[in-house]
Image 1 (spheres, one colour):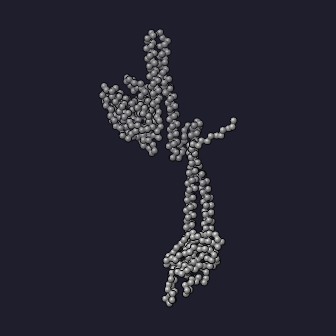
Image 2: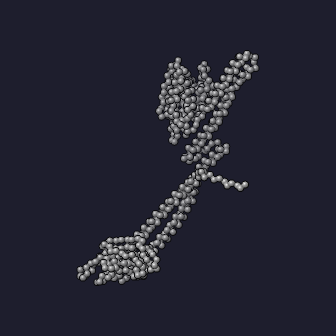
Length: 473
């Protein structure tokens, strides 16, 4: 069977280097083209201006050296202004337009020149690309300068003064040759400069994209397991990218550790019910009692599994989460707790900054608020205070968060602060609970790279739990 040609993915985007090089090359070519056009126009305008000045000087010199006879005929200068005016078909021509005719220089014998009109005294004209017919019969073009003058022979002359016009023409051959030479040199030099600039641009582009290539290489090393994270030595424009990648890597690593810890905690929690079932099954007990024991231990294991799975689902946070208002969640939690602790008559007050936001999972916010506020309701005598403020602010980052819960209860002794944050340890064994609420709060706060501090409340005199979350990515 014949081999099928490889399929080309036309939708695949070009590399950044190719896109930048193409864009810069197009911009450079456009710039050089515009610069070349501008220089060409400037040279042509300068050459035409010089042509006008030269023809004007020839016309005035020709008039100054010539005179008129008594019959009104123009007499050219004895010494010629330019030898080309005496050579037929030389390309330089002079014409004097009189009221009753005109006079042409010797060089005008042969070519067919356009007829000139009479100009007003001191009126000037400069015309481009006038058609002429050369001696050889070929069509050509010429520049023509004209000046209107008045001839006066003096008061003793019998003739009165009369107007006349002098025209000097020069074909475009010499100027076209100069322009052609200039254009060839111009585009040759611009082409060489463009080639050098393109090569230099490619080198500069390769050098400027080297940090991005280094990021790609480091990311490949991380993927292959040769490195644990991205390095911190990158340009500041790439720092948000590398920090986000490192945060993602650390978040995934923490999630993996958390899953392992959850499985270990679950296995450890199930050991006791399984041991009880194993022991009871080997004993000679009534069937009804055994059923009740099995039902009790199964419910206990089901609760443990549900709790661990729910905790694992709530743990961690998603990067770039949407901001959450805190007051609605706090209000819902407090309403539920007020029903549970209605007999105590505890009042919960809010001091929440309107600009404060929690950037994370709603479940994590409920976990932190629920455990801290419930702990405060459990120990408070009559008052609980929830304080929420916007935390530290860093450039180009999400603002941090400060969340504190105070109560007017007995507080936490300094020697027991570390204990109450440990898993399975209760501040007072006489109070009902599992001793895992504050430990769960600490785990959630640590997953956001924050801190949980416990101290004496300065306002209510009881316990003060303060959560500080740093600015996020």
